[in-house]
Image (cartoon, rainbow, N blue to C red):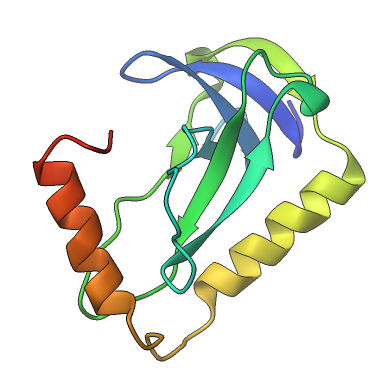
Length: 134
């Protein structure tokens, strides 16, 4: 189990995760592969696409939210144990790992919220309430 591998993990259901770091004793830092948002999240976060080209059975994203004082994003970064990993699904290319590293760097750096970010967040909340987003 190494950085850049994609594994099926038994979380609330079986989900693919990308291993970032860690070991079998203390657990692995990982990012869950989730469905693309389908909306513009620029200024709010960044998504790295993963899918069939990377050896996965469907298209998804690794989503990282930017720090924002007006909104607390749920996180898709988690710690998984070796016992929760059931099967290796793929190994990402060095270029894809570089793209993930850049997204991780961008999501961790302090920044002022972009103009319109709060309005976009309110629009997303309203869409969620209406059931237009999952």
